[in-house]
Length: 99
Image: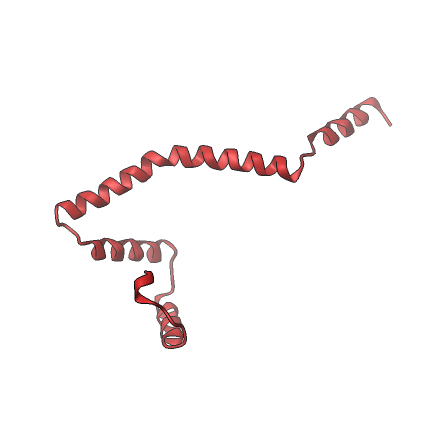
């Protein structure tokens, strides 16, 4: 075995991390991303509030627009979605106050 192989093996061993170390790094990265996103989240809240204050769209219309956007963005098969909703209607108990 050459010295080069031995060094690589040592480097591989020293780079192994515990689950806890990976979790700490993941949380730190997630925290940094969420902090970086906060100004954009605030901008979204302000946009929504602006549309409500100016009476351009109601709360329900804003909600419907967001749902439509997400369906379009995800290329949702609307006929399959409607079929599923019709199939589940009456089988799934939903409290209207939970939404």
